[in-house]
Image (cartoon, rainbow, N blue to C red; front, side, top):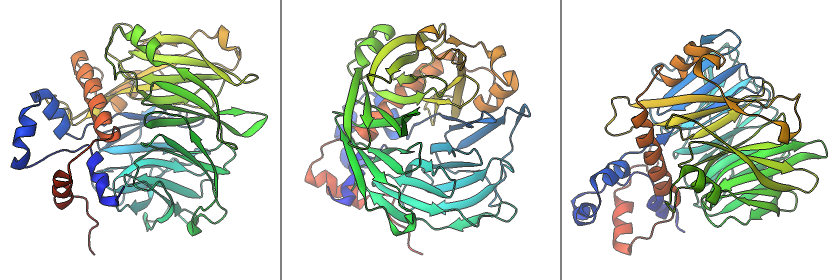
Length: 452
């Protein structure tokens, strides 16, 4: 695929009058979602649960759990932290750094201690995924053309004004949107997943600025786009066991050294049964999150009002559905999941930005599931329970900060879930265009590299 052809897979499908006939065949609601770049709400939890961050649209909201107060982020550049939808947020493994990036082509590195932006990186293209090396010395991000970039952080002084750092290319998936980036638990590998069903395991070099040229393996087996990655940490596997979710309604487990597929768990049928729906495309795995205190994997699935818990048998290296934890009485379909190495809690968020017809430009709802304490290592003894709002750490103050308000109309969240589903399909499912239409799209693209 040529680089410019990547435009065929952008969410934004605004066309001119040449496409009036094609657009007239769509329903009004479908056109609205198609024309708006709906971005799902994201959540990330500090590794020792010092704080929780939520991104919805261009809003970056952080709550300090230790001091029980909202965090005011300081960016010396002035104005908002981001000017367009945020597509990736992540805490570093040591908890000292936090990174955010998105459609405004800015990658911002934040100190979790001072809450200040300590470095800003300009990307040539919109950013689709982010990761921080385990030692905190490098930030990696992927753009929508399939290139992974790396920035070095040594020498960054948070007491000074934020630095404008320059990124260099690390590796590439050659014009395939990268959907997820993760470092292995031992920090030796960087794993990248893409829209073309591939997972690439690359040796993270000692000198990343010179590029990453050693591919350890490819994990091949998904039959649709790969949407998310996570690691199960085990004492006998320092590199961890990789799990992935995708548009083929499966969660798969991998040996990253050999690229071997260890097991596949088909979650689609169970999700459709629990959600009482017959829609054929509603079982995409939107996010997965491993629970550090045990061998459970939380799975968020489109149209499932709650999460599915999978159990991982480390001895046989197999996956199985343990149970579904439903959100009773609410239209809560999680768009992102997060957990920490302490606390025994699973954090979830649902919501979207730029939702047409809503009075709120960026809405989100946060929920927490308890019952994953280390005192109960046996997965069969876990009794996960959805906490009521008053039981959530931080209570009303946290919800007001992370959600933007204490309560939001339930009907809005159903619309948000449908809009996120449509946006994901528009972004990640391949489309076929005629040569004439492709040439028109190339001429009218609006993300060409700016000339300085």
